[in-house]
Length: 273
Length: 226
Image (tube, rainbow over all chains, first blue to last red; front, top):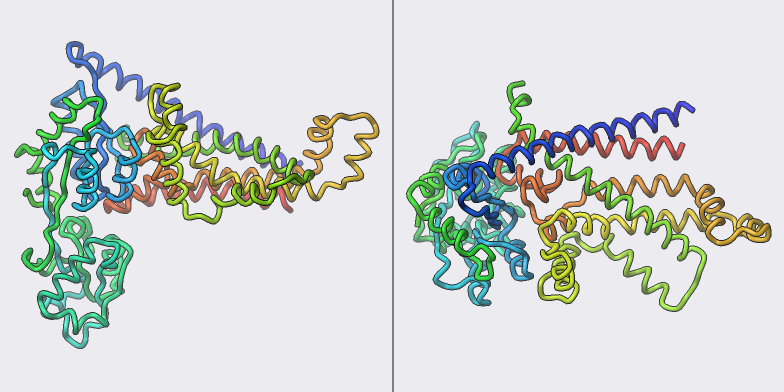
């Protein structure tokens, strides 16, 4: 009997949460709708879906707010993920208006297929490779220190699957230190994992994007790799040709190239191309 | 406390939780109904190609969820007949809607329910069902009033396991429904994005929420099994 009572009360509790959340959501949505309706009686409402690399999230959140305030008739929806998955979704006909990729080759695939017209795409942002060390232990001052004997572990992304790892390897090779450090390298599945290794002090240093390094307050940037030593890191953006709101998408695409937008990206560590 | 009272923040925090509950509940109910029915059929009947069909149904459990997600966007995508039919009926593609997340959850949670239901029904003695049949009960009555009550323990734990699986579904959902905040972002995809953009506070809050939800459900399974 007691067990049954407990079972029922837990179910009721869950139901209560669901109802509480649902009310919240509904009222918020309807008030949102009313506001946008009021603000844009003349212009037709449009909803743009932008598939963007997850690393762009913080900057895009800021831009979304500013842009929606300036264009109350536009609602921006972001779909964040890994550039490869986003490209697959678009190839299979997902209703996306703009693609903001963190990998040039994934973007090129869509341009080659004709999903994005060549004149509707450009390299908007760049990024830098930096050497990061744990905040507590800053004995490493630059890439040349990595060969020192007391440095036992360095982390980079797996070069085959993680672009940042590929660039890091290229850079180390160009600097003529790769041979000496290769045995010390710990490969990670993504840049975030490299960062966690460094944050927790499990490795002596790691090579990540500047934008990722800036997010963490437990690591210190000690050096930037010379851009000439690796393939350029590029974030291309393009309007999808079949977009149902092509004009509105194009307008947002133009806005992203404006000084206002680029300033936001620079604040988060990106470089304007 | 300031953070908690901020309505914008609360909306950002609650919307994936609410959406996850909604998706898990709807897909849970569908999985429980279909899983019970198919479990019963497969437990009692043999027919040609049964082994093959069973294997196909169980596949989503062993395939990496991202692969399941990829299959789903191909099957329901614009380039397939199924996708075109759906777009023609609903005037919009299913990909990037929360229904896509429901479908993804159904596909990955189904094997759990099916497996439990099948072994549950296999444990019901044939003699009891036969006795009911001799007394004049038709197949539906036997199913509803004899088999289901006798297998109820297994069915309930199967239901809760598949609900929990639906709640935690990540890979296929991310691929098929996308990760659109406020529309298709569930707790797992929200956690992924929060960690990836370095927002550990939000990540932890969602992690704690999903742990509490899953803990309650797994606890119910334990209590029921005692």
